[in-house]
Image (cartoon, rainbow, N blue to C red; front, side):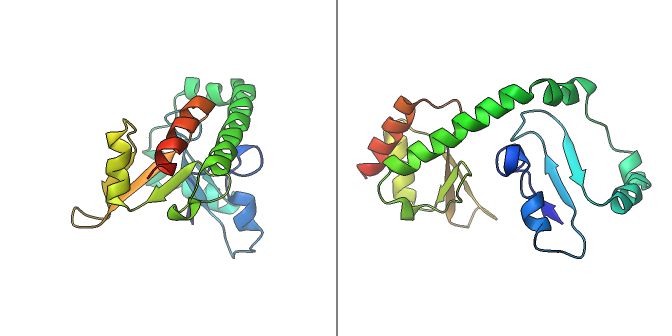
Length: 172
């Protein structure tokens, strides 16, 4: 079982996430679940698997008692395919632009084609904040854990935004 909430709509061929990649490993059985909120921006979830497994899941009280996605949300995915495709292309450009303009990329944990760049340096986090750049930061798994921070590049960022981010990061 794989949770692809951070990949579906963003990574993989046409935003298909990791299903094909994991499937190529020949697992005995593959079930992929995901939120559609991150990559598609809609309130819904999905489960992918074999016909047998999906039929089994559909026959459970848990499935029957779950709220379905709003029809308008599902219609959005279908109707906005061209928009999603264009935004994925812009996102890929922005990720590549960031990677090509940042020094010391090794200070981040990141995966090719994914827009998140994680780090645990509290001083870097403070440096960004002092330069009016706010990143996602939290202590995980509890409040005594080291801080985990994440820079997330989006399709909404401009090259000017990314240049500013790189300038601040490169100046650290």
